[in-house]
Image (cartoon, rainbow, N blue to C red; front, side, top):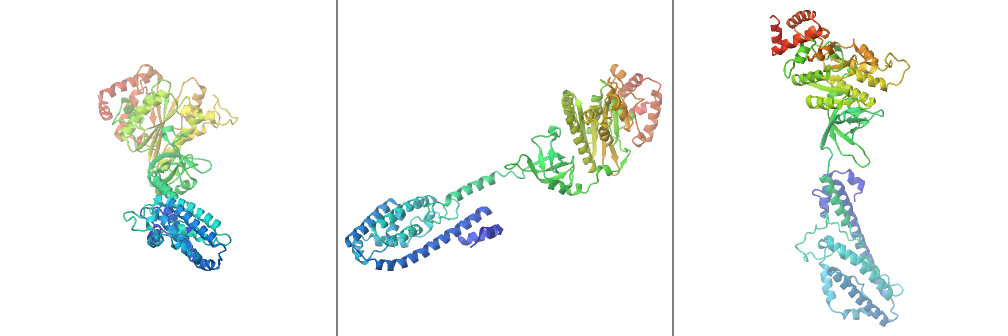
Length: 609
């Protein structure tokens, strides 16, 4: 005998051995829980059968002395009663199906010696019936449909037999009724195996043959059949571990987090994936980590898709990322590797920038522009040149407080990730999007990647921070809070080239001469923070000369680390020559020369003319 706790501790192979020894349990392709329930039901069935057999033997032994002690008071009445009972039993037997009809006369208790004659006068069918009963066995009875009908009819037959015997025998005649009630269903097991030789004994739904026939008519096959159906459906619709998804982690104050989707600009959305506190601690995750993993559908009571298994973190193995150095502890150095903007998909704008103010990996550049000078178009050309010539660089275009049509145009024309928050959004969304993009870039740099953020514009981002910032009581000129510019400075100051590691380059646009005092204050705060500056002039743009770059005012700090010595000498001569011209004349002259040459090397050679 096994209890349910012992069975659950066993392995599936051990349970299959137990089922194999039982011979009536089908164990091939059955799950562990179903197999345990089948074994328990088989044990209950065998216990009931053995108990009924023992009770039958004890009742038969007890019946003989009881029959001997009964004194017939009225022979005629008793004989009539016996005949009536026999007649009624025959009637009830005719209502029952064929196997029960043959069983009921054998169940009938042997009458007293005085009553033997009327019983013996009956036809000899009883002897034949007894012969048939000997041949009965369990196998054919295990059919599902026959079992249900037999049990229901046996229950009715036993109730009628008990009522008949109670009415016929007056005082202590309940003893013969007891074996009728208990032996009837037990003898129904003994059916003739030769009666249906072509039938499969395992036709009872679940194939384990647990039609134990306990006489209560509850039909144990139905729950098992339902269980089989439910198990079959569950195995067909198993969605765990099918879908792989990716997102940027945003930590919550309580310790758990969500993977935000770039389709929703990293804001809260229905696509968010839940990460538990234990997973975050296990892999040492931070806000901004790009996590790829396997998700499962939410169960009952869950709102989000939980992450089941982590596959990649920032493109690396989770074990490698766990031991990374924090971004704040990385060593910043001057940019030493230049972005190639004058080769594939180059334009006159990118060629001029490549010579006069080169951009390196880890550059902190600022494009100072007046309204309608073509700064957005210039930013788009820089993005396309970087994407074409440097596929190893992760490019992010961040548009804050911009027009929706420009966002669509940027998404369609730039091969990179475009994150935007248009001017009709709240300042809180501007700030949230900018923060999560910066954190994502930092996490990628910690893992050794080169990241470029093209921000348009840092002036509007500073305005959003100023709106969100709680009032400190100290207000600068133009309505700028004293503490409001600290966070946009932290954003712009994150750009750096890491020694023996990755790099984060930020090229941001700053607005000037907009007529707003606040914009002037913001520009003055950022004026000396960058190491590359590109000035755009409204006068050149009014002449319809693009790019409208003020060449004499545009430069890069430590450009000797980005350009070779020969190019530096020629650019020094070129700058000296252009210094005598005004910005419009200088740009017009350079524009004509660049149109006549295919690349910058050819332009430098043509300077001798």
